[in-house]
Structure formats: C-alpha cells, structure tokens
Image (cartoon, rainbow, N blue to C red; front, top):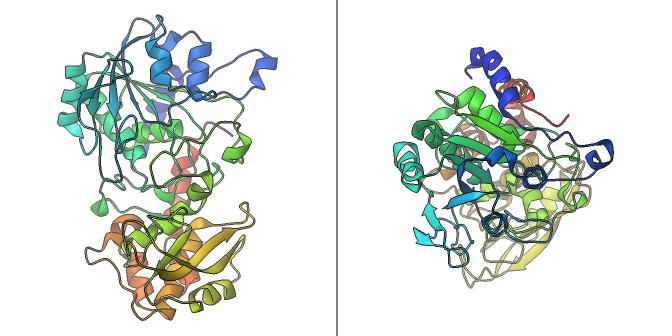
Amino acid sequence: MHLPRRTLLAATTAAASFTAAPPAAAARRRRTGFENLAANAYAQLSGQRVGIVTNPTGVTRDVRHIVDVMHADTRVDLRAVFGPEHGFRGTAQAGGSEGRHDDPATGLPVYDTYLKSGQALAGIFTASGVDTVVFDIQDVGARFYTYIWTLYDCMEAARLAGKRFVVLDRPNPVTGRAALGPVLHEEFATFVGRKPISQAHGMTVAELARLFNGEFLSTPVELDTVLMTGWRRSQWYDAWGLPWVPPSPNMPTPDTALVYSGTCLFEGTNLSEGRGTTRPFELLGAEGVDGRWADAANRLALPGVRFREAYFAPTFSKFQGKTIGGVQIHVHDRDAYDPVRTGIALLVTARKVWSGFAWRPDNWIDKLTGSTLVRTMIDAGADTDAVVAGWERELAAFRRVRREYLVYR
C-alpha cells in the first residue's frame, strides 16, 4: 500500500490541514467541517476561486444548502459546482446524474462529474476556472457507496489540473469504531471500489482523503481537511444533532446506512435488496421465499439483530409490482450488530432455504465484495464463520494502515 510515502505525507498533511482549536467552551460544541470553515471566516478559501463537489447532503443545521450560503457570502468567491451521481440537487435516480447546466437558484455553472475521472475530470476543473476544489458530501461508511470514489477521482483530477483540494468533514453515520469485511483486490476495481479498503471502512471522508493521499494517489494532491469538533468515533448519527438528508434516493434514513454495508450484497443476487420499498436494504426477498429464511437466520443468534418473515411488493427495480416473500431486518442493539457478518449470514441462509437462489450473471457480487472469495466459499457450502475467517488476514493488514490516518481518537 505504498507505505514508504507515509512519513513524508504525515508532515505534509499536518501542515496543510486545518483542525479547529477554539476556546475551551466552544470546543465542546459540535461542528461539521463546514461550520468550522464558516466560523473561521472562510480563511482557508481566502483569495481563491472556489468550486465545490456536493449534493443535497451539504447542508447547515437549519437545512440551508452550503452552496446557497456560500454564494450569498461576499467572503467566498464561489465560481462552480460539481455534481456527483444523483446530481447536485439530487434529481436523478441510481446510475444517473443531472448533466451540465446552470443552477436556477444561484446561476452558478454545474458540471457533471459522474463516471468521469483522470484527465477528463481534470479538464472539467480546468475549464471551470477554479483554483480550489472543495468536497462536502455525507458518506454512509461502505466501500461500495460511490461518493467516496467521487472523492478519490476528484482528488486525482485536482492533482492533474494543479488545483488545491479541501475536504469539509462530516460524521460517519454508523460510527468510526471499526473496519469490517473483506478488502478489495485491485483487479476487481470499479466505481463501487477503486482501491483496497474494507467493505465497512469506519472512517470519515476527511480521514479517507488522507488515506487516499498517503497510500493510493501516484503523487499527493495539495490537501486541506477542515475537521469536525465534538465528534467521537463511537458516536451514532442521531447523537450528533444534524438533520438527516438522504444522500441518495435509496438511503432514506440512518437505519438504512446501518444495514447497508452488509445487505447491499444482495444487489449481486437475484433477490430484491428492497429497492422500490419504504425500507430499502432492510427488506430482502424474492418470489418463492417464505418463512423458512427468517427461521434459519434467527437460529444463528447473530448479535444485535432479529429477522421477521415479511412480504412486500417493490414499486420499481427487481420484482416490480409483484408480491414477494423474504425477511425484514430488525436491529435491536446497534452496538453489538455487525452488518457485514449479518449480510454474509443472510446470503448463506438464503442459498440453503431457497432453491431459486442465484448470483447475478455478471458476478457483480465479486465487485461488491472485492474478490471471488465470498461467492466461491458460499457456493462450496461454507458457513458464515468460515467466510468471515477467509478475509481476516487482509482486514488486519488494512486496519494497521487505516490506524495511521485516523484523526478522531
């Protein structure tokens, strides 16, 4: 993982990063990266022509979008917005974006970054005329959630274009306590996983940016990270006091984020992962599935979770308009709950109780898990413990690297 560069980058990042150091009374206040940026009178952006990569989650506590706030503030020279998957204002579904347009509210040019990388994305940054690219998007803590790879691609493109890059930090909504799950093998790299990190990374976007800069970019970008104050690694999103804005149409609540790093694996099967319901990734099922699946999953006595036999009719995606059977996940102790182990257990039990179980023909499951390990072990009849044990050595190695980039202790 390019470890020899770490010593050099530690000094570079420490010098480049802004960590708020307010008076003792103010230090107890909870602030996002943007709130600390604004409290510091936007000093980190002074004299810069600024563009921002963001989406509907880039909001203040009173749910104003930070683009609207910054555009109205004469202390910021905001020149452009860069929209990711689903778009800057969030009008597109999964796999879509808003395209190049002018934002009706501010008149700012909005550039589309979705599925763009390298020199193509660097050209967009150059054409926008900005000096500094700012990133502020709420992540959900899973490797296959594409916004962190938008972060990576934008960092690389900013480096190629000679732009400065600033990351405004927000909480990991499912805590930053631990890294869980298999580590990506680089031959399986796609937009749902560019680099070898674990399936649930347990980091904030600022920490990920430091990791990307230190381990994966061929040459570091000029990086500033504006950190939060008052956030602890053990803290869940509902304890932070921020409103939840769905980062994407199928991530409606923090409860969705809690299960997502495990149950998104069902995208790699012929079962519904709950898209088209009010509980995506908490409801799973298919035609012909019955109560035996919930019974089998409950017999495993997985920590922190129970399973209910459920029937539902997705309004779009798999099994649209058909009533199907399956399970609903009910997490009763989120501190004990392991979403990745639970996702594996549900794959193992679904394959055992439902004869119609199949992987997607394109082996998408390998892209999601980052290797062939999960698919081939489950096909060979391995149980949950054996599958999890199969990735532990690689996960331990990643955890050692990850530790060097954690800034909230």
